[in-house]
Image (cartoon, rainbow, N blue to C red):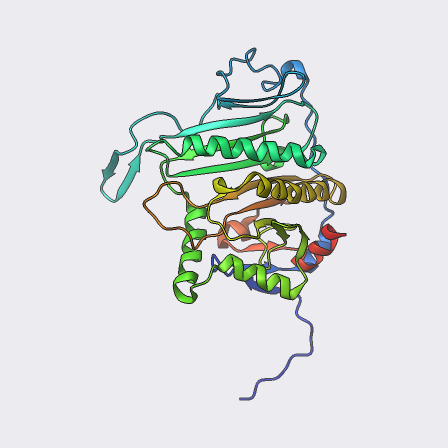
Length: 333
């Protein structure tokens, strides 16, 4: 039976992520159902904000303070309601087929002083200071013998999981490597073992060749809309120089990375009406017992426009209605 070339334009496209191997479904027709609106803005008076007067609301003393001309610019404090805490990290409990261990680690909050400013309103130098605080706390926490992975993340807006509108990020030091990071690292390792090349570096070379999904770059950083984006307007920022470890970035490299972050945040704020979003850093695990030089650290920014439905939850298949190429055109303008 001979195959026929279909002349009908397909209504959707399946794309495979080269690192994870997961498929995503691009369904542009679904975009006609949606109007991309900004996040629901939640107002919290200063006198009721737990991050505006830290001692008043029973917060623990800061572990790091960056001063400003008037008071402070940034503070890092232990989370008052931590997801993990102190304890013995080496114990593993077994009950038949089940296995568990204590939730040991550190949970910290990185708080910016200004009550009513968003990341899009911060300068490149100010964002660099935030990155420097991330790096400083990372280097401190990684010295603990129980810490195997340090997750640095930020929730912007109620829809993205932020319970306090005052600008803050979080640092979670864990005794295990979390699943999403493990999948990313394993995908990178498999590709390196087969081709002796970094999959992320290869992706960046492909993006430079295609010239469709790069939205910004400077001397040290590059911003792309992933070929197989998991959500509409997903954005990733990579250091151009191959490096597995975020904490090894120089001050000048952090400045370039901050410049790229500023471009993304300002674009989301101005062109997409300030949607809720999450960002997080994917970096190689801490510790010296493993070789992660095949990995390429990066930041992922995931805007939140829709609630996950049964198709996504039941199949694990992400469905997006704005193609990465169209998203790149909108955000690079």
